[in-house]
Amino acid sequence: MERDWDVRAGELASQAIAAGEPTTWFDRLYAEGATGEVSMPWDRDEPQDLLRDWAEAGDLDGTGRRAVVVGCGLGADAEYLAARGFATTGFDIATTAVRLARERHPGTQVDYRVADLLDLPGDWRGAFDLVVEVFTIQALPDPPRDRAMAAVRALVAPGGTLLAVAFRAVEGDDPEHGPPYPLTRSTMQALAGDALTVVRAEELAGPRWRVEYARPHERDAEPAAGDRARRSDPPTSG
Image 1 (cartoon, rainbow, N blue to C red):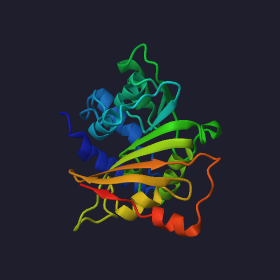
Image 2 (cartoon, rainbow, N blue to C red):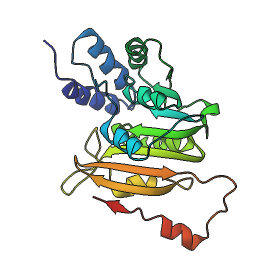
Image 3 (tube, one colour):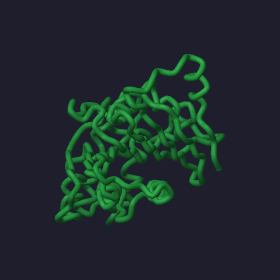
């Protein structure tokens, strides 16, 4: 009998984390989805709603630009960005997810890759004008979440944008209980590191975060310490 995939995800994640291998459970879960042992995980054909709404509000045009989707899963977000004109890469550590994404989208323009966020190709560093991260870093405990966040921001090209969507920690949540681990404001700020600035941080229903970050152009002057401090406190929008 088919088991609900999120229950199985919790089981596999707990086992993998206890074994000190916190990223190994993703492919097993997708493989069980492919054989019908569980319902297909993260199974959607439409882009994530907070990504879509953000893109439409800004009339996002990817012509002549590169995008990457972190933990692309079955490809809905990557296909959406490609349809908006981006030369798009979608990567996932789960070999099964990448295979299924290619099968679901025959003739796709997306470059689907199997890749580990904790060990990305060197030529991806600073290579993408838009980086989209949806619910991926919060699938990992800390550590190695800190390494994963560093890898995500390293993908952003000078002048580029990172859009992150995450489940938001609220009063009573245990940020150490997961996955998914609900993320605090301090974690969303830490995702910026020293390379990015927070453009807009929205606390939305769900409860979820939608946070937009920017990487300055290399030609831009480094802000003074006082300016850097003032820019480090992200705004809040309901």
